[in-house]
Length: 410
Image (cartoon, rainbow, N blue to C red; front, side, top):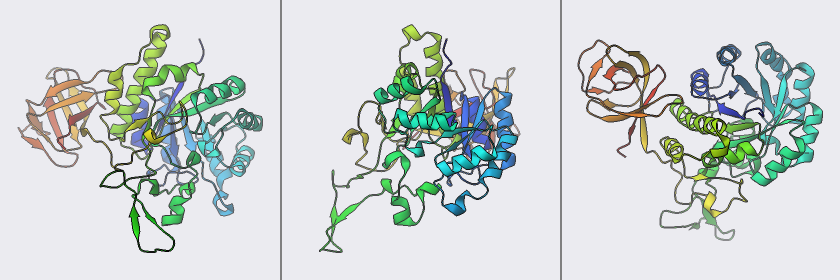
């Protein structure tokens, strides 16, 4: 049997890395304190990366570090020594987009695997072969490719190099994310990891000879968001992606919460495992998409996989997220004899509420909170303090790391 596809997930900090691994990722990608494209996430210092590598390797998983800025001369200083440090602590690969960064890393840490970032805008087999000839281990294809084009590249190049594509998450309105709009409007450089996401802003038209006159761009009375993309979601097409021969399927979202990561990774893990358990009779399970919809998200699109993005790939009415469920707590402990779970609160929760509890690889279950105490076993009616420890009784076993959610009233 051919090698299983890798499920690659984001990790914005050490805690998120652990959730990503525990909920089914085969590998994680993360940013250090320099050279990466996500200033909004907490990112990792060298000691934290080392701890993350150990946590992943102890469980047979991998860690990739992003070094994918588009640098000026001053920005590339020190990358060679940094790459050596990453190799020494066991990082499995680094992700780069710039040829100068690639050369520096290759010379400084020749045995460290290098993946070419989607920022490299790789869209054809010849470019993939070029990077393979330079010694790259993997290419992350541009998001603007169709599934047909990806299959052609896999056919031409998979014997030379691994192929990775994005699977789920936010889409950028600019080609391969190489956007200048944020820098122009706010001074925050998207290509240095500090994007202000001006594609989500609401815009008006101004005619050159009539300054100060703002003409609305309207789909309806509330206006229109002309560059606001839907989120990519390919949960319904896992079989097609695996059968295309792709090596790694990547989830976007290093600034997302533990709850988001656990929910999304869990669904894709279950879909991928279901395919490999019986490829011939695999059928997409709609319940997995419903699970994904229980985290904050925009409407979904398949992006460019089945042709060029069109008006159906955009959200014109607003730039807000859909929030159908609230994340309310994390299980810390469970007593099998009493069936009492100890929970750390994340949102206010009341006795009498009906909630859902889920964990890695298992179906969620519904639970009415009939029994509720504080950590000193005193009866309470509500857990309303940030990270308050409280206890509830559950009908099923709850393991540490299981998550609790409730349908939103909003």
